Image 1 (tube, rainbow, N blue to C red):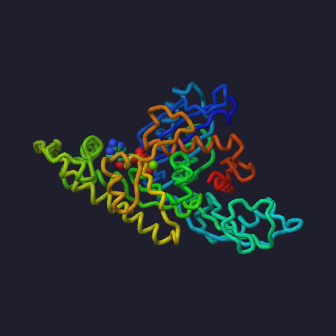
Image 2 (image 1 turned 180 degrees about the horizontal axis):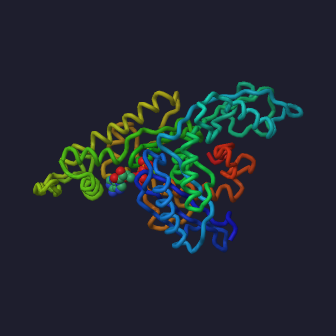
Image 3 (image 1 turned 180 degrees about the vertical axis):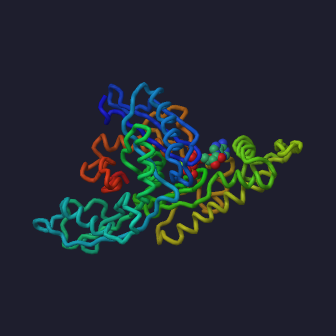
Length: 412
Ligand SMILES: Nc1ncnc2c1ncn2[C@@H]1O[C@H](COP(=O)(O)OP(=O)(O)OP(=O)(O)O)[C@@H](O)[C@H]1O
Ligand SMILES: [Mg+2]
C-alpha cells in the first residue's frame, strides 16, 4: 500500500506516547484502523532528554498501532508542543507585480516571505507561517487575495518557531526506531483541527490542552490563529500538590487524582472518603473528596490564570466570544470546566475529536485529540488541501524545519 494511503500520527507527550494509524476504505473514506499507546520515557516538557528511552517508547506505541491496523507504517506525522515552541505575529508588505495589478501566487508567496523575514535566534527555525488576513491597498479582512486587483499587498501572519535541536532529537529517536519523521505540526494546531468547529473559529475560541508537564493553548479568531503558547505547568503538578499535602507517594497521588479527584467544590461529595495510602509504614488515612478539591482547585485556577495573562499580553483585540475548549488528559479532571469558566468568564466545553471521521471508542476522549488532528491534517494533504510546494519533509536532513507546513494556514 502506498504511503499516502496510510496516515500515522504520533503525539509524543511527557506522560504518554500515542499513535493513531488511519487508512482509506474502498469508498475512499478515512478510517482509523490502529492505535498504540506507551508510557513516555526519555522526555521532559516535550523535549527528548534520553534518545534511547524515547526510541523504545516510540517503537512500542507505533508497533502496537501497526499490529492493530495490520499495516506497516513508514512515516510519522509528529506533533510538537511545550517549551520547544514559541510564536509571534508579524506583517509583510509587497508591491503587486502581476499583469494589470492582479494578485497572483507569486505575490502571495512574496508577501508571506516578507512577513516571515523576522529575526529569530540561531537555535530556532520557523515551523509554520499561518496567514491571518491580507490587506489590499489598506482594505483589510481579505482571506484569499488571489486574483484580486491592487497595488500594495500586506499579510498579517502568525509565526510558530521551534527549537532545531528539539526537532533533531525527536527525529533521531524516530529514525533509530526505523521510522521516518514526516511533517512536524504544532500540537495545538493539530488538536484544533480535530476539535473546533467553524463558528467557534470565526467568533474567537480559546483551546487549552492540559497535558502532564505543560498546558498549551491556541486562540483562534476570525478563522485564523492569533496566539499560541505554552505554560510549563500541567496535571503532573496537580498530582505533586496532592502528594505533598496528603503525604503520600507521587504514584498514589496520581492514581487518587485520576480515580477520585475533583476540582470544583459543588461536584465533590463531602461524605465520600478517599483512602490515602501512608508512606514509610504509616497507616492509610481516609480523607473527604472535598479536601482533594481544596488542593486541586487552586492549582487548576492558577494554570488558567497564567494562560489568561499570556493571552491578554499578546492578543490585542482578539476576543473569545466562541468560548473555551479544554482538551488533553488534564481536561478529564471533574470540575475543570467550571474552574476554567470562572477564570475566563466564558462558556467552556470539553473537546472530543469531531465526527467527520468515525472515531473508534478508544480515541474519543480528550487525550487523543492531538493524534486525531494529525490524522485529519494528513487527510487534508492527501485530498489536495496542500499546494504541494510548501510542505517539506524531513528528508532534508540538513534542516528538518525548512519550509515545513506553510500550507497549514489554508485549513483555517
Ligand atoms: N481521569 C483523569 N482525571 C484527571 N487527570 C487525568 C485523568 N487522566 C489523565 N489525567 C492527567 O492528564 C495528564 C496527562 O495528560 P496527557 O496524556 O494529555 O499528557 P501528555 O500529552 O503526555 O503530556 P504533555 O502534553 O505535557 O507533554 C496527567 O497529568 C494525568 O494525571
Ligand atoms: Mg500532550
